[in-house]
Structure formats: C-alpha cells, structure tokens
Image 1: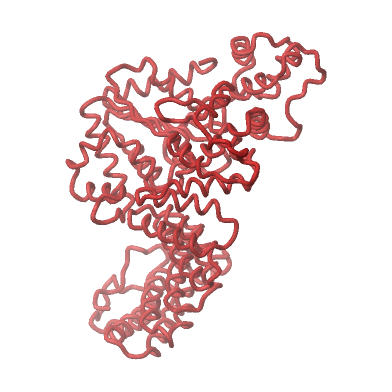
Image 2: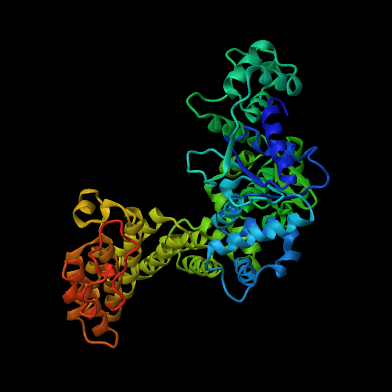
Amino acid sequence: MIGRDAEIAALKRLIAESREGRGHAVVVHGEAGIGKSALLAEAVQGAGDDLLVLRVTGVEAEAELPFAALHLLLRPARHLVEGLPEAQRQALLGAFGEGRTGAQDRFLVGLAVLTLLADLSDERPLLCLVDDVQWLDRASVDALVFAARRLGAERITMIFAVRDDGAESPCQGVAELRLAGLARTDCETLLAEAAADLVPDVRDRVIEEAEGNPLALLEFAGTLTPEQRSGQLDPLPLQPPGLSLSGRLEQSLRTAIRRLPRRTQVLLLIAAAEGSGSLELVLRAAEGFEAGPQDLEPGERAHRLEDLEPGERAHLVGVAGGRLRFRHPLVKTAAYHEAPVAQRVAAHRALAAALDDDEHADRRAWHLSAAALGPDEEISAVLAAAGERARRRGSHASAAGAYERAAQLTVDRQRRARWLADAAEAAIGAGQLARAGAAADRGRRLTGDPAVVARLAAVRAAVDAEHAGPASPARTPVDAEHAGLASPARTLIDAAAGIAASAPDDATSLLATAAGEAWFAGDHAALGQAAEQLESLRPGPRLAPLTQAVRGMERVASGDPKRGCPSCAPPSPRCARPRIGSSGRTPCSAL
C-alpha cells in the first residue's frame, strides 16, 4: 500500500502483542474508498502463519437478518460450541436458530462469543477481521463489540472497519484508528503506477478532485478518454460541481456501468440486490427476471454467465469459486441505483421467488419488502412472521425493523398498532430508546385496544425513565415538566385510567409499575393517584394487598411512616422518605 506505513505498523504491533497474550481490538474509521479493506488485508500479510484468521464482511442486503454476520464469522469455531457452559451454549444456539429456545439475553450471547473466541485462541493466536461494520446486523455487532471490550489476556486481535457516514459509531468503547486522505506525494506515486500516461495538468486535476481518496484517484483517472488523458480537452470534464466526493464517485461508477451491455447491467443489478455474492442464486433469479417487454428480445435466452464478462473486463466485478464479488461496495451501490425503479422491483421479486425454502424465509421476506411499493397485507404478514422469528432468537433490533415494516404495509389500524407495539418492545430489548419511543407514540395514536394501550404505555414509561435516569433531578414532577420530560409514573397512571373499565387487570399492572416509579422519583402526588385508582378498580385476588401496599408507600413518602407501615414503629431507615438519587432504598418489606 502507498502512504499507510504508520497505520500498517500500528496494526502489526497490536497483532504481535496479542500473540503474546495481550488482547487488542481497534476500529478503523474512514470514508468510502479511503482504503479500509485494503488496510485490513495488508495487516494480515507477514503477520505469521501461526495466526488463525476469521473474516466477515457486512452485506447491506443482510443487515436485517438476525445474527447473520456472527454465524459466518464463527463457522471455524463450531466444533467448540458444545464445550461452552450450558447457558452460553443455549444462548448461542438459540441465536443461530438451532436451539430449543431463543437467545433472550443479548449480553449472554456476547459472553458466549467471547468464551468461544478465547477457546479458539488456546489452539492458535486469533485475528478477527470484521469489514463494513455499518452493514452488519445489529445483533452481531452487539455480540462482537461486547467481546472486543473484554479481550484482556487472550491471544486475540479484533480489527473492525466502518465507513464514516455521519452516524454514531456502532463500535462504542473500542479504540479507534482513523484514515485520512493520502498526502500529495502519495497521490502522485499512486497515479504514476496506475495512470502513468496522464499529463501533469490532468494529473493535478484528478488529484484535486479526489481529495486524497485512493479509490477516487483510480476511478477518476480511469474514466478519462485517451484525448482527455493527454490534455487535449479543456476544461477537463470529470464530475458535476456541487456533489460530495462519495457522490462524484458513485456518478463516475454509474457512468462505467452505463457503458456495459444491457444484459450485463441486469445481472449486476440482480447481484447488487442479492448482496451476498451467490452466483448460483443470481443466475437462478435472472431466469425469472421480468422488467417489461424490452428485457429480452424474442427468442433470446435468459441471462447467462457469459453476460458477466464485460463487467469483469471493466474491473467492476470478479467471479471465482461460485461467488460474484463487486470491486468495491460503491460499485454495488452504483449498479443498483443506475437501474430504473421498475427493474429494481423486478430484481427483488425474482430473488424472492428464487428463495423459496424455509431456510431463507427471512431473506425472502426482506426482498418482498423491497419490492412492495404500497400497502400489501400478504407481505405485511410475512414480515411480521420474520419479526417473530428474530424476537425468538434474541435479535431485538432485527425484530423491531421487521415489525415496523409490517406496520407500514398494512392498512388495518389495529393490526398496525399491535405491530408497532411489538416493534417498540423489541427496540427496548435492543437498547434503542429513541426508536422504541417513536414506535410507541405512533401506535398510541392508532388504537384504543386496552391490551395494546397498556403495552405501549409501559414502553413509553420505560423510555422516559431511562432518559431521566434514577439520580437525575428531572425525575421530580416539577423538574420533569420544565425539562420537557414526561413523568414515567404519570404516563402509566394516565394510561391505566383509560383502560380501567374495560381491562382492570392490565390497569392494575400499569398502576403497580407506576407506584414503583413514583416511589423512586419521590412523587407523593403520583403515589396518591395510583392508590386512588387502585381503590376504584373492581376487586380481584391481588388488588387488596397491592392497594394497601401502594397506599402505605404514599403515606411513608409523605412523611408519615407510622401510618404507612404500622409494623415498623419506630420506623426503620428503609422506611425513610426517599430522596432523588436514593435508588438503593426500597419500600419496607412489610409493604
């Protein structure tokens, strides 16, 4: 590589230290085309034959498939799964859809990954390369980052590569290595090797446009005609002004794809939509591809392997070992977006039809989703089923995405509200508070069903409680209002009031939770409201003792522990009126 000596040396130093028992993890950040994947490949060269290298690359088409990336990465370690502690083994098998129960605890899956990698490193020093993290499914990222932050004395190096796109890094807590653009002299060296016939003025213009990005240097130089390379056209036509570098790169690649034969463009579109690189699947889907009367000439055969040759000659794709690989993810993006929307829809439909077995049910669901241009009850139900499968496997983020898309595609308001409730609960499980709150708010505007209202209120209250924090002054009723934060207890109390007549059991559960929130917030008034509502409900087996307990909590919180808890006279310290931040105090056990 040109211009990356310091970065390569830093990675090789980490690998050498890990080989001696000091585990390391680092995430390489940089824009598209800056050389992250090439740096990972270079780090392996010369690192030693004793290393066992595990690799996985994020695939955009699989970003919603539960634990897809983790399943691929850990294939060489499957022989060690049976030796894991029972709870970890069941969690990991559940995550992969192979266990009797789902992986309900994402942290337990992460612990299983750490144990498995550590066991594998006992055999040989281990190097894990995780590329294009921005396209990994969230469940896999959570598990891998959990392990990466706890390598300790293991003989493991984990190197992540993630594209900078303005979003929050998915690898929080892992050391960072940021790749900047190449220096001017390095750009000149690269062009001297790859495009030696550029005259100085043209070379300078290419360097200026590329902003130190290696892929842009090569691509911009490659798009020039012989006349342009010799400087005969002035000014030099490269890309439209005003576009970002990534936009200029994509436009350049789209121009290259536009020059290919029509049949080659179709195959590249299907490959881009498929995402994983399965040549057999791409060709099978191509047989059923229909995008209008101009797709195939009369008597013309379906798209064939030979139709990929122009793409190979243009160095846009490579075909080997039954896999089709794009030269760079931006080529895949360009191949997809260069096609008209009707062809993109047809590609997803053809892929969904080709994925007709149970093993690929989730992938089929998402291709159907991509092909849906409006409400579709059948596809909506398919996505909801995919969400349920993801939930059972413990991939809460994938479940949330599937339920949200299912809600978008149904016109039935009650069904949409239920699936938004499912999405909100799944997002809470994934730790995605903003997503959970937004889904809960959308669902609440759609329904008056007591059971769904109770679920949505519980999510909304949980989100508000997490945002405030147990020790935050915003947990007090007055400060919460001033801070723009809802009081979790009052959210639950209001919801309980709306469903008390039709669903007293659900209302009871909401009020019990509200009482706990109000206690820790020191909200005497909310405790009183919860007690009053409980007293007004129809009697039930758990209602009388619960009402007595909440009323006792309210009296203790108001400064009257003797009346609140007669069995504690004089009152114990645990019965003292709670203060903000005293989350360690609980109501007296007598309550």
